[in-house]
Length: 221
Image (cartoon, rainbow, N blue to C red; front, side, top):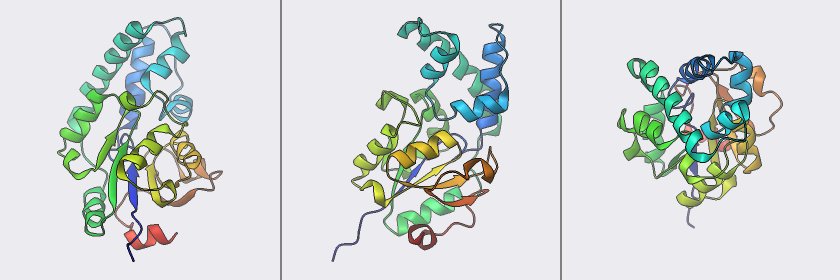
């Protein structure tokens, strides 16, 4: 009998790398230059997982055309990369977990709201892309989280049914996207405490990092 194909799908920012404070800092700096003050905690809770173009239009107006939004988003992302580059590294235990997943024939995917430049900055900058069966980003789907599109496309590309995928996330909008996709989720508390995810029935585990997670434990949950 052929074993059921399984997959781990990782959000990138705040999950593979602990960088969300740098994203929030760069957004705050970006908006402050335009005379707009942003509350950091509220901003993260309501936007983490959304695409940059969605955030810009929500904060600056739906009247902006695609070219205007692209220029503004590129400006913000440049600020982010300058801030985060000296601190770039994976969350504790990540490298060991994906090596173990490979040994157990678990497909590996990244599903992120990040644009291609940031995916390259993180995955290629840390030599991680080669480990993944697929990488899905903002350029591949029309809608960001909490819409499930990015997770469903990652599962489809891996050839794994949604119910056999486990999503790793750090943000409520991402966990909600996983729920809508019919996927269970593991929450990393790199940015928010466990209590921020209490309402989600699809969360099977909450951890500060990857170091104590095991393959058998996760798929038996």
